[in-house]
Length: 137
Length: 110
Image 1 (tube, helix red, strand yellow):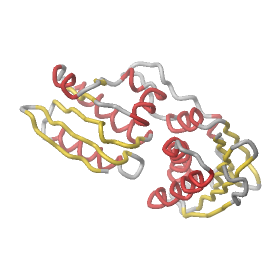
Image 2 (image 1 turned 180 degrees about the vertical axis):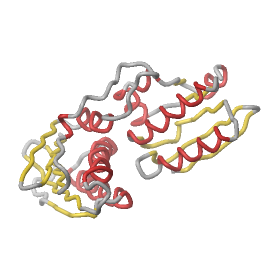
Image 3 (image 1 turned 60 degrees about the horizontal axis):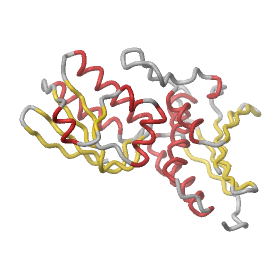
């Protein structure tokens, strides 16, 4: 794996039409770093980004900022930041993966999948922004 | 995402390809609602060519399964593979949705 991969950062309008460009930005970086399960990284990031697009700005326009870097030991960090309502996805009720069809709740599934796929998920609130960092090894 | 449709008797068989994500899930939902609205009660969705699925896609499948169940219809899923199969397992959906290995097996159960 190349040791000298630069950090990268980009801001996007938090709109569904930007989902592909956002995921492409992350996926291309992961590919440069040498990751092969790109579809799983794409899925984890899509789930987080779509929650921001749908809920962070309560119908008003807003932005999402993606910061990418490589930590030591083959780990890629994807930092997803928004300026929307305070929201810690990790505090949501875990998705109910064991109940039967009739009882199955739909909410929370996206966050659950992201947390299951990423090796590490961290949330912090800093200066009126939500920052969720997904790490993949 | 591409959806190809084939009618085999009173069963509609849909074949999805490319990606079922937050952008394409509404198209799939509209397609299914259209079929259900026409009174179709037997739908098989073949996943052999689908490369990617996210929770938006799973949601559409869950709603369709429930809708058809309520009207004594059948909504069956077949030929899961690759990342799509992994997501079904991770989410537990492989247990709660009617999933079959092949289209032939799904037809036996429709």
